[in-house]
Image 1 (cartoon, rainbow, N blue to C red):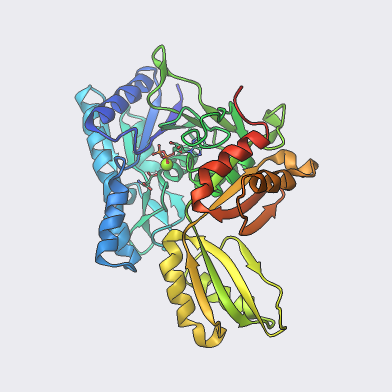
Image 2 (image 1 turned 30 degrees about the vertical axis):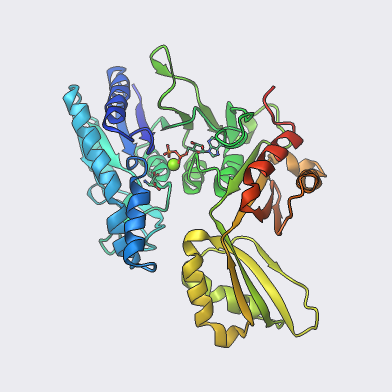
Length: 411
Ligand code: ADP
Ligand code: ASP
Ligand code: MG
């Protein structure tokens, strides 16, 4: 007998029939003698709809109220799945974030989990009751509902698995594992049997939304065994083996590049004609940090005349309006000539721990893009990844070209 956390994403619970299908899958684990907690997302499309409602009322809404609205999708699915389980004879109850409680910081809209007081939940699980937990949500220290950022149900699941010391955290989704790149865009993408925590962390943070970044951080920190697998494809009654996220030493043969990720979630901001003086970067990014806006890629041009320069950086599309607002508010201090905001960009990244010991990885990327006439706007690198910012319309072309260039195509 093991204690398991199973997480089902939006597509997996997207209709009433699919919720009933999830109930049957949960029943299989219960019948096998396991103690089970299930974490659910909102039905697919629901969170987008809720976010859109908020935007229609205000583009810069009070984030605590944004959270009150968008957390409601998971409340619905947790209740529906608990009912579906009861209907097939499995004792179950739903748990909202505040009921567990799952306590977060107060950065509403992208709150971090601080702790999970799981005593009551574990006690109920040990009586054979399935805990159906609303993902994506918790309660902030000031008692308000808080959400964990888009895709946050993955993090709810991994954090819960760590808190209840589950044997495994199974992330059921609409693909049967982690692929070399998004299989919906590159049909020649290959499924990975295993991927290291480190590579998965980069893949996720660079846009592969199959797992939320913080869920991977959490798994790495608490050594949670995470498996990504399909809700829909089954082999003789049990799920097909998915992808296991593991330590580096569990992988025998290391590829040079193991994956390619993209993020359409970036927006580019250019400040034209800022003063070229010590402290200018701090003056620009300080107010953004204060507003909890994360800046990703940054380039500062060499000053042509020694007095002014251009600064280009990226933020998430969701933060673009607030970024513009904050920078316009600091205009007197920053003295820039013009602010250009461009959301027609995508960040494409190649990732692999093999890069540490091999040269020429970036060059192969630049050449593959150049051969297709794709212009690179910004570049950033780290030990195990190279990222470029390009125009959004080239996303598919760039992904396919790079997948081939690094020899990742399926035979
Ligand atoms: P869920 O609703 O189950 O959380 P998501 O839509 O958040 O599912 O994540 C699954 C999706 O992630 C897949 O449908 C796929 O299009 C996308 N994806 C992006 N990159 C990858 C990758 N490298 N491997 C697998 N899936 C990927
Ligand atoms: N429903 C939330 C979202 O769409 C959380 C999740 O699905 O993980 O972002
Ligand atoms: Mg997801």
